[in-house]
Length: 230
Image 1: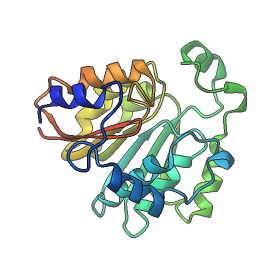
Image 2 (image 1 turned 90 degrees about the vertical axis):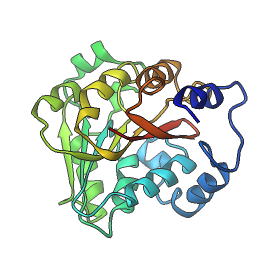
Image 3 (image 1 turned 90 degrees about the horizontal axis):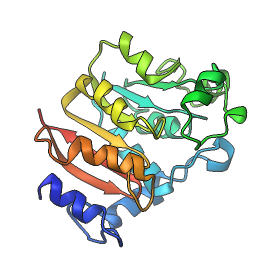
């Protein structure tokens, strides 16, 4: 299936309901049952679905020993915790980027309106949560904006998880995907027009639909995932 065919089917009004191929609801739901209920969404203030959390765990578990995961958009650390659990048997570095509750004036200027800024978790709170998981030495929390953080980035990435400002998904893609290894995975949250946000859906379609550098596209509720081919 071409990338264009993928988006035509995945973004259809009713959404895909097939057993195999680009959408595997039986497998995705199984991952959700097995791994997607480990953390309290309400307690973390997160909005990831259990099926999505289960696949996030599964994809993280595929990262090789010594690999690196970059997460853009941490909030209270819910998705970060699934990345931690998926990699707990190996030495995998997780770097999570978020302004947390700092520089609220700039956040207000750039906000996509999806998050209440006055109640944003602090970096210290998320660090405490990572420490309770025994991952304080594997998780690096970068307090700031992704477009600034990338200026100092030099390392290869094995899994790039984009879940930040919904108005700049394409910018995060263009900034960070050059660091993703060939064979590495990229995942966009909230990128399906039915389950996510139209702007992110259009950005992801723009990034992947006509490119020969991306393949093995997969749809999991609001997530679109792909493998870097070149």
